[in-house]
Image 1 (cartoon, one colour):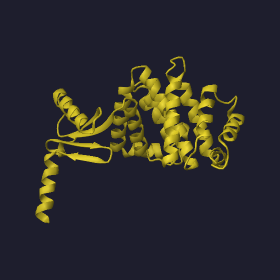
Image 2 (cartoon, rainbow, N blue to C red):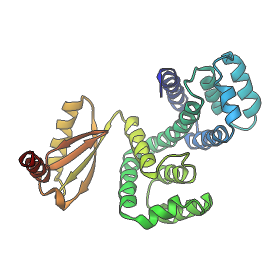
Image 3 (cartoon, rainbow, N blue to C red):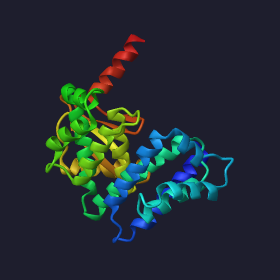
Image 4 (tube, one colour):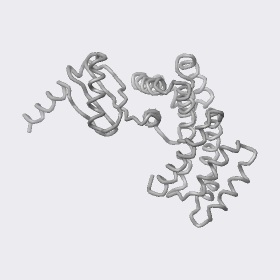
Length: 271
């Protein structure tokens, strides 16, 4: 997102956090209603352009949102949406993406209240790894012929009772309404969003053998010193690493494995 949209999204996040500071607010219901608004805006291109038209006053756009959504969603969600359309957006699609992020954040807030946010982070990562190892599952979840309800039922069968409720909801929403996102990219984005709830970065760590608790603690402390913030470790084991660890944080890769060193030495010899 460009400058105007980033500022608008940041303000919307603050409003959502302020709203959900009140524990009487049902965060899961907020997520459902925000997801419904996302679907509406995604489907109605004329409407989203009208709600983000820079030539129209913010109050006029807010009034339009109130006329369309009043009585369809709760007052809390209506306040969030009218606040968003009063802001300036670089592109109309940015508004839709931002409403969707608020829906995901609302589910994560519900998990955080229940003390399950760490579980959700780990489960999203593990689900991503399962997808990576199962072409059959990936095909079933991305099949353009299969209905959204069929995919949702498959996920309920696979995940129901085995993961946190928020994890199940987030994955089902991603699969049934991908909005042009790849499955892998969507899962990664959700993982980052979950980590951001704790002010943490996510590091994907691959080692030849499982790390001990002491090794995990030392690695986490070292990464926190490097990046200046807490780092959540998503751990995986790959015997081909040979030794050491390989760490990826966002687009940055820290290579510390024997295999990487051998590859680098081979490249230098070849050069």
